[in-house]
Length: 290
Ligand code: SF4
Image 1 (tube, rainbow, N blue to C red):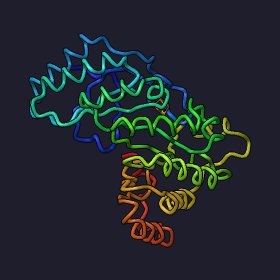
Image 2: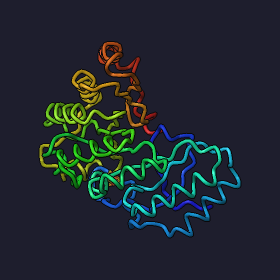
Image 3: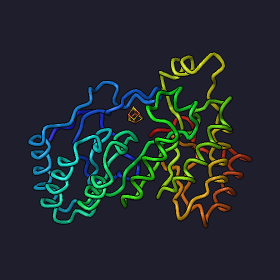
Image 4: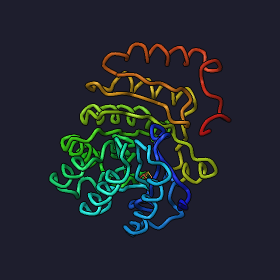
């Protein structure tokens, strides 16, 4: 099987088999994201997907987890998703879960019956990119969805029975909007009450200058301490039930994991120690994204 590169998956899918049901991202316009800019979005032909899946089933019959790439398998028509899930569960005898990224508009366009049918057929965690709960930040980065739409999409998936893992992006509001970005992101996630909240730190590499200029003349990214204060703001203000908070993505300076309702004080203690002694606790710049 040949992958159409590049290939991405969430950190928690590190041990999953990745199968490409789509190529690229159906939105592909977020200004901070270069993941699929070189690909034109398309749903792969079922015959091509089937060939890959059957080859993997023959070579790796012990597979327990499959992540459906690329950007958003939930953009596929419901009947086809059901066909894909049946194919996978029929041919991988040990399969326990199939997961996918999900973008808000593709969740909103599906009916509740569609979502319930997909969940019942074995789709498990949906990874939903929230990025920010602040409408000004979302519009500025061309997320393609408002706070209200993201909230509706997340709630709809949760109501249909999916575990939902949301990602939020530290630094996305710049220094100027840092407080509003975090306050609104914490309130959006609290209202949605997802299963997981994962924070990533904005990393732009060679596109940093272009991105900052596009955000406005006064835009500047927060420094390490500013990013850490954003993590602190989230941990302090997220009001969720049994939600796991994590910063296990390689872009972050400080890896954290805990259940907010029971581990909040412990997490805040770790963050405060890191703020007092960043050299000791924070991942050095050159080790980020590795
Ligand atoms: S929806 Fe996700 S994958 Fe697509 S451009 Fe935005 S951040 Fe990137």
